[in-house]
Every structure is written in structure tokens, then in C-alpha cells.
Image 1: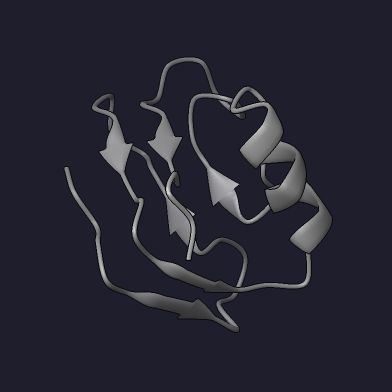
Image 2: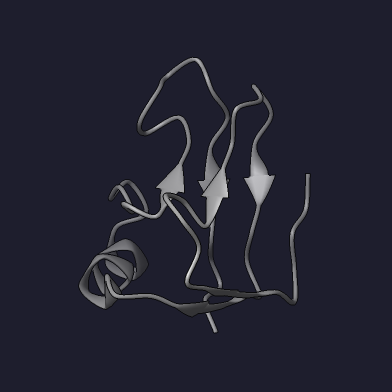
Length: 71
């Protein structure tokens, strides 16, 4: 699944909630978030967990969400 060229801002619990078993390519998006420090950590280490993304890092039975590259 691919989600590109989207602005994520002011969403309820998650900006992306991946409840499927397939991975999501969510790169090339704009993230207006309060957890900028988490995104900076993710850029350095893509195993870091982002609190506004629900994926395999929260539930190993689900697919991953990859947000690189970040705009």
C-alpha cells in the first residue's frame, strides 16, 4: 500500500493506523506533528517507534509503516 503527497495534521489517535498485515509506504508526506523528536530519531534509526503511527512496532502481527523520506 502507498500513501504519498499527503499532509498529516491534527488527527485523533494516529495519523496512520495499519491494521493490515501488509507494509505501508508512507514516504513523501508532510507531517505536522507534536512529536518532532521522534521523527528525528526515526531518521537516524528506522527501528524507532513513532507514537502517531500504529504498525508492527506496536503489534507484531501487523504490517510496518515506513515514513522515509520525510518532508
